[in-house]
Image (cartoon, rainbow, N blue to C red; front, side, top):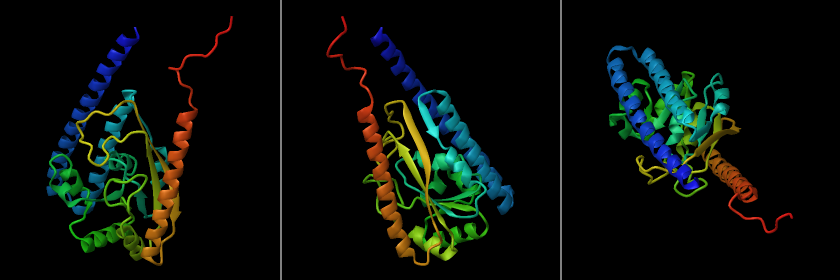
Amino acid sequence: MKFAARAVLAVYDWSVFYVCLAEFVLLSLLWSVLASLLHLVLPQELGRRVGRLGIMVTCRLFLATLTLSGRFHFDLRPLDALRREKAMVIAPNHPSLWDAVMMASRLPDVACIMKAAILDNVLVGGGARLSRYIPNHSLRGMICLALDNLRAGSHVLLFPEGTRTVTPPIGRITGAVGVIACRARAPVQTVLVDTDSRFLSKGWPAWRKPDLPLRYSVRLGRRFDAPAHSAALVSELQQYFSASLAESTSAADAAADAAPSFDSQPTASAK
């Protein structure tokens, strides 16, 4: 019976993963095509709002489907507190490609700083262009667009490592986050992303199924005031992320060690 149950669960996991992967491709493609058409006819300000709202709805629908499967668990509620906050730089750690989807699913007016190549991606390029997301074509252009968004009241989503984490718990923080926050006189809200899987981490192909279930959660970390010196902020962020993520990893390991093992046999039995 145990073997049969495990076989059924394995088939279910494979079905859930690849059906949801197909759903993501389909949803992304449909929105990208529609957004590309809207980009041609809508004025810039209206297009920006429609584009960001469309991405939020699409991401939330996708994550809701994953949650309904019972094999993916997301706790993103802390992000809701940022919706009505004043303009700021939102700076999460970046363990996987999920992170941008999770952030966008909860924030209706956020400008995401992204790789310039994404604008030419058939699945997400249309939505990124309509939303006026910020490509990293050049450092100067990226900073100027980020400042424009912050001054207009939008949040700016910037993964301070510049790429997915290569050496956990955190990679090297780049100087861009300090320069943008310093010039805009904007605070930096850190977000701590926790997960129990390396799925979609650096080098993990999207079609490779992970072990299920998967769990993701976010915590609002320390909010740094608008800095006077960009280099000082970068140094503080590096120390803060390193300490906070190492602490959460240690706590998770301790909890796992303390959990009872259902595979172990009792050493004695009552008679």
